[in-house]
Amino acid sequence: MAKIIIILGIVLVAIGVVLLFIEKIPFLGKLPGDILIKKEHFTFYFPLTTSIIISIIISLVLYLFGKFK
Image 1: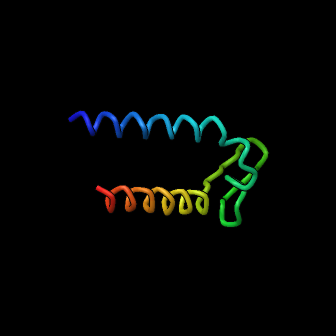
Image 2: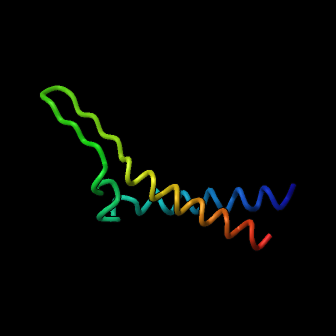
């Protein structure tokens, strides 16, 4: 139980650091494949490519954590 709480704390700190610096990453959210529809009184934004890249990175990190377990 203690290991799970420690890992959860590390993950929360990592998420906090990422959220702190996310606006300073120039390409994040503006990749080709991200869907942006602007109309007069309506804006729709779906970061498809960004979501896929973040998913791949998270999968790799979790794979590496599982391998060292």
